[in-house]
Image 1: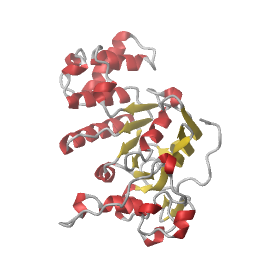
Image 2 (image 1 turned 60 degrees about the vertical axis):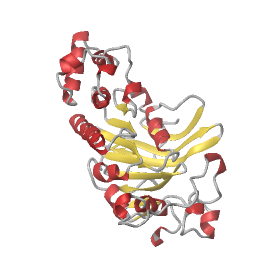
Image 3 (image 1 turned 90 degrees about the horizontal axis):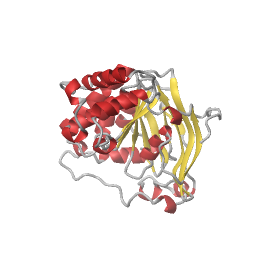
Image 4 (image 1 turned 120 degrees about the vertical axis):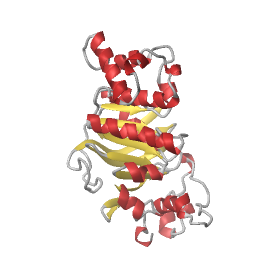
Length: 324
């Protein structure tokens, strides 16, 4: 992926919020292909200092691939083009770090938790083994693991699920990165565990002063924790802007449909659903990929794919956003 091409002047509009004046990472026209089939199609956005940017959409929308492209962690055989400035793929663990979804798989079962955190320190800093272990214990203590010095000598299977999740957050933040990427960190968690994990993640993000790119399908999480939301559908940007504005008055029919399907909006009525299913990447319809499922679609929607345009302080990809 090129990292030396100037950022496009047609980027997203500026918005208020934490660190809105400092851009840590600029992504322009990101395209990701498997076997010649594009699964992420021309996505552009910025990551700003200390903010939480949520990537939202149904499964298969391309949000996890987009996030992992920032880390240079896409699988082999994948074609990537576009511009990411600066290229931080060689700075994993130092300037950018991943909070994985599955904490158990992320931790080695044959090494003590403290040793794994100490190794993360040693991978980016020349410090003594004693200092690395001291930092590991401090990191575990910082995420709320009780008796951290003793727990650091334990193996992952000796931790509860919640403690393992805290441990991978400690590992991701131990070297004070500028950007954290959390890929569906609350999937399959009940509401209490979800809030605990997000609370710890928020505390650690604030402690190290990092921005957070949060991949999620949970709009409640976006509403409660995100400064901005990037809604994706079929590998494209559908809507991007301040999360409160996007969720309170969506401009894209797809965003509006996602919100309408939330249980709290049902009020005793049957939840509305989209007709049909998201298209396969190798069988996209002509024009707007959402048009076959959209009640506002007209002939132009089936002919021309809408480009992101500025509207009401955000970006929206829709020919008829004014009618939503």
